[in-house]
Image (cartoon, helix red, strand yellow):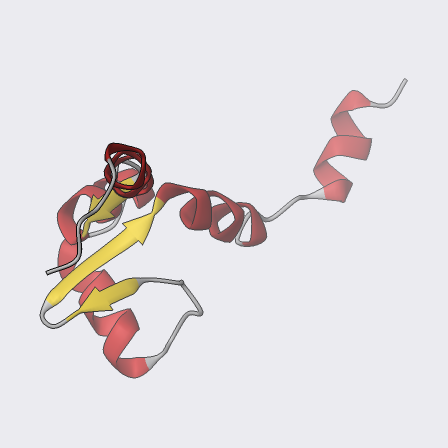
Amino acid sequence: MLAMSENSLATIFKSQSNLLANEESASYLGVAPNSLTVWRTTKCYALPYIKVDRLVKYRQTDLDPWLESRTMKCEFFHRMFYTA
């Protein structure tokens, strides 16, 4: 068995600390947990995830840009109400 240094273990635990379970990710995105399951299996959205055996995790750092890419910006509304 390979011996791991405390520094290596700290790095592993730190990198896993920003991993969210399916339910946590769904809550963060404001969708049902089953939606994420459907999106993964149908490849409906290119939402990055990590899968080891049956365990599925998401990085919050991947969810934020995905949310930003799904944000619709209405230029007409902005010009109509916020332009002097």
